[in-house]
Length: 222
Picture 1: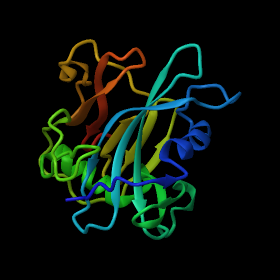
Picture 2 (picture 1 turned 180 degrees about the vertical axis):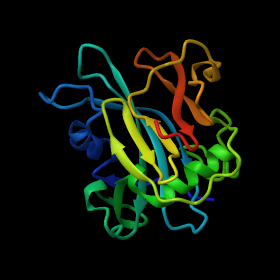
Picture 3 (picture 1 turned 60 degrees about the vertical axis):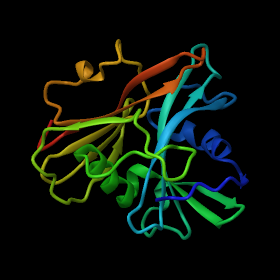
């Protein structure tokens, strides 16, 4: 299990995201002045090898006329990830671990593999802030019969990121989060879906919101 260190990060994660978010296709804010971010929730996944930190951060931007909430999967590494310069969010100095390279997790094969394992029920989501503690608020489902190992290509659009495999499997991450009408997020799944991950976050007004984080379409070519 990953160990959560209570220490300083320079710059902080929110500081890194403040400069990085406006460069994303799914960022809905204005470039003028940049985002004003607050942490709103999230969860972690464990790396079986114990090398890569993985966090699914939920942040809310209150800079615009209406608040917008984003899902930002991040990986933290002790050395640069070869071939992933385009996915680098930035570097931080960690009070215990030293320099850390933070990446957009959709481009990190370790995070993608563990997210698929979560959907299939082979691993558990972990609490964002407490070591060795599962997060029961994160739910998942899967009707696909065993996902074959594959290389996924991440492509951003205005709604999020589509991870596509050569066999037609598509794993879509909802970057711009929208609350479901009820806590029954399964009702919001498209008929073609063969799996999902859902969770909750704290809305700008302090209320609890819940919605889809990721939707799997196994073998879909749409």
